[in-house]
Image (cartoon, rainbow, N blue to C red; front, top):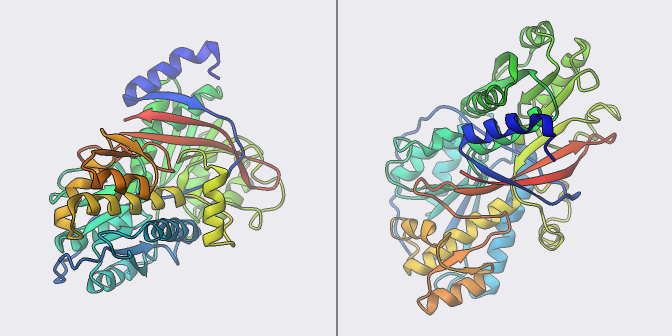
Length: 428
């Protein structure tokens, strides 16, 4: 609900971001994070050839700063593959999965692991979770003529035509243009006007921080300080001191797993969650019940992409992996596999260069369908389809990114875990 005295500020935030936002729902299902940096990578010698079997290579975090995202993402992929194969597979054959570790935040792992997937004749590489890792291997993957499809990348840098000249990159997570606007809008609605931003210095952190700063200023608020820290940092004293010196009334922390180290330093300088209103983003929205004393994060608000997780899909993911505690980007992983499989069905080929253009086509502007069986039956009848995903709207634009998406707004309680407040759907 927008406070009447601040409605004009909210309008300015949304207008600046060129978004139409609508709040939907109020529930208690969890889900959380992601993210980004430099481009590099040599082309692989592995040629992309359709062999009749759709092979999905998963380049997802088993280790590194985003390892907590790995289990729900792998579960989302496996659940999709199980559903597809139960319905007869793609082109009459079971979909095959090959797993690899993106090692998000750990140098030199993703490149070698990408080679492993390409050598296994992956038709689509699903990942990475980190935008910076994806940027580091995109040339290697697309240079081999293979589709790269991330369920969690949010950096706006991945919409640059120079990043993906072959049009082989896709994602089911929205650009941080949307999350930045929703975060700024939340801060303004909450009544704060002197906000500090502390963010990772990489393609994810810098660009998301810039969008949040832009939105806050457009809404009539001010940014007390914006501090960027090295993604490889182990100590954050200098940046935390500058945040404290700026005397903010709120703090937005754009971080990954290093949140566990930053929060105690903020508390020591009297700018912790109990001192000023604190906000997290998708990269650090996680279960901290075992990491901090009870009540440490009480009242912290957070945003991350994704529609409300239905109890049905949550149960299906838990059947795949009974140990799941977080479900972040699990639905987006499921939808990325589904869109790839349906595109191969429509193109009648598992050759990535052949089915890649159909990924956008099956995501919108046709007869709505929501299961592989239903959608593939329509395709076989010659019907154009519009796949409706479990992660929310899946309409992809010309850059392969969602043109519609949902951002959840959450709040931490005394247990240092989070519950949903509402969901906001936007058109980018």
